[in-house]
Length: 353
Image 1 (cartoon, rainbow, N blue to C red):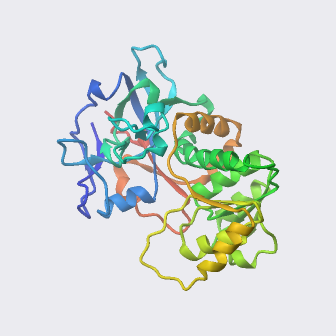
Image 2: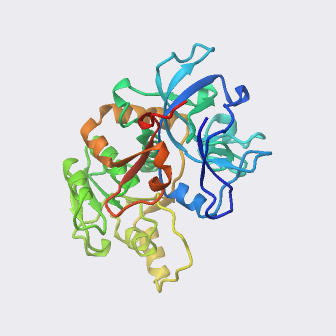
């Protein structure tokens, strides 16, 4: 079968293999036929050789951690043939750490977890893959065009879950949320804020294009200037850019007793002249919280599936700005200026076998 692969740590090693082995039964009882995989910055960084780890004994790593497929068989009876599913990315470490031992693998403490398409497990950018039932998340059949958004949605569900938990330290009645960054993570974070009934604001550097319309369709107010120039103080900020200036401005802008969730990852290597003492004073005297969030566990994936089922299908579909057949896979990893989410569509290829 065909699979999109790289040699981890080797830039320019992206290849579509036509003779990749069928998934071994050791990977799981549930056999799935791929429908689509989403592409994100993590994939591009792995292709650039920045990180990535092949499975033990393998030279190449199958890419793809944003998955959608249909069940071919499940001898355990947990799922039925034809069910629409996505695969949970992270698996707990083998020791396990205290968090992995209770299925909170998103909070792994020793770093020995594995991740499909990233670290030690083959990804979902192959025509067929297997999973254990506990890592297969069922989706509403009506999500067959947009269910590939489940993985990024799970990430922001976890972020909001932790925001809610932190908020319960006191009387928590947030009214206003600011989302910085209008990529897939940011717009999905705005979707969840809207579903919570908050007044939503989205900030991004784009001044035209689909991001403005997508934010507007949620009822959100769109901004394109600096965070520090906003004329309000949000109760919650979900920072999705990773841009150092935006991160620091967000921490300074949140309202008293507010919460800032850092969901974007900075590249590093840039120094900013910044008054850390003033920030410390503000955080302490106003009881503010800044925390980081990444990945998701099964509880978040299930909640993400419910959130997608409640969302407008047309709006979700508009997030996917380009669908690429498997035969043209390489173009999927070269995003254009208007792209929000690019998807490799396995059903569009007449060569499937």
